[in-house]
Amino acid sequence: MLASSLLFALMGVCVKLASQQYSAGEIVFYRGAVGATFIALLVFWRRGSLRTSIPGMHLMRGITGVTALVMWFYAIGHLPLATAITLNYMSSVWMAVFLMGAAVLSGAGGIDPRLVGAVLCGFAGVALVLQPSLEPQQVPGALAGLASGVMSAMAYLQVTALGRAGEPEYRVVFYFSLGGMLVGLALALAQGGLHAHTAGGLGLLLAVGLLATSAQMLMTRAYAIGKPLVNASLQYTGIIHSFVFGVLVFAEPVHLSALAGVALIVAAGLAATRLRQATPLAGGGSQGD
Image (cartoon, rainbow, N blue to C red; front, side, top):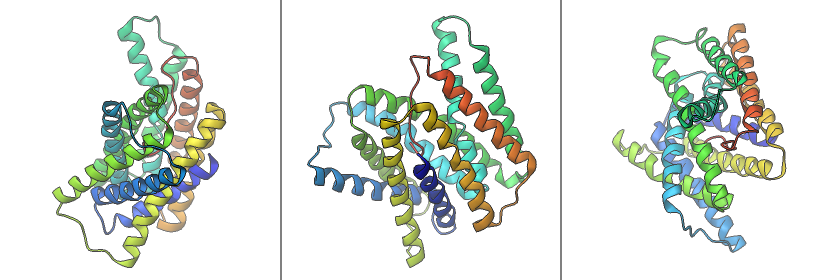
């Protein structure tokens, strides 16, 4: 999980650098193409199968996951790196919101006040993260970052459903990558087409795909053999990596109030994750799903 979080943070650096030359749709397209090719070769080498009996579930998971990915990449290109990463990591808090809503609609009893506290803590953290450094032109990026966290939470729940249906992890990652490739291409064409490559740009796109796919595989392995709460705790080290990379690579300023906001979001996410362990809707996922 530690290695996965580091690779995701490095991927964020590459996405932000690539955003200077490519649109979000293009980056999603190439990331999906590299990921799908990597998984297909891996499955062929291991003599596995990509055939699925539940294409509809993969389609719904792909829609939410790819939407989250596009919004996240857009946010990375228009916000400080750590801010975009932190907003995406709000997914644990949004999952708590979904659980609260499900409890109310099903009449399953009262809402755990600790869960309400975790949600409010997370929203307070978002306010602190955005307030110090958000410029008017960054508002669309901030909204995209928040939306990416919501859609990621939905995608995580769908990944859990796919796992319970017996789908292996590599098949889930493959169809997600394939969906990202198709949707990314459509968005890229709608935004003016594919840009010509430079050696540096092509290297960044390849790095995005390889880093993201490797990080997903590592995270999948971590959830397979580790404890969910420990994994969730270690996953938040990605925010620390992002802050460091943001300062060192992009010379982004660090505000004390923003650091306090990150701390609140991490605390809210960990609390929400712990409280979800006792619920039937609990589930794990991987970043960028």
